[in-house]
Amino acid sequence: MGRKWNNIKEKKASKDANTSRVYAKFGREIYVAARQGEPDPELNQSLKFVVERAKTYNVPRAIIDRAIDKAKGGDEENFDELRYEGFGPNGAMVIVDTLTNNVNRTASEVRAAFGKNGGNMGVSGSVAYMFDATAVIGVNQMSADDVLELMMEHDLDVRDVIEEDGTVIVYAEPEAFHAVQTAFRASGIEDFAVAELTMLPQNDVSLDDESKDQFEKLIDVLEDLEDVRQVYHNVDM
Image (tube, one colour):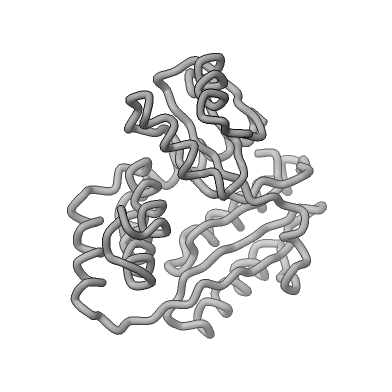
């Protein structure tokens, strides 16, 4: 699973290079999560997860607090969480998760992104069944053996633990996300290299150079859309 981490790391690096866009998207996610429950991360697991993710992308505390305060203020802005699925060249599969206050705008923009960059939209369920929802938590402060021992100490049955480029990655069921983080915190770790709930492909496809260039452009265009939260795919980049 090491390559899976590399793809996530590359995506993080790309997002880190576009900080204003990243901050705006996280601000929206935090606001929505705070609106859907208590505006306190310790009392709202969904909000806590988004805040933890935001920290791994170096989102300033001021932006996090501003989004939570906006939710506390009774703002009535409503958002819908929608998933789009589609295809790129040579068996490439793409999942696009969005958070939008204008469904028609988002659907039009996502469809245009596919159509103008060698892809096409699929129906709901046409792609997602080939991906597995997965919790991915990474740390730099422990060895893989120590992490395995920690997981056993806390009676956590995880899918895999791998070490690559100095980072130890735990792959687990989505519902184990907070339990894995709690185990790390019990050992004194508060900072995470990655803390994601992601969709990992069951099988990967490789593209020739021309197709890969076109596919990378499709992914870049999708990730640049204001309403897009996450883009997942099965291409070995």
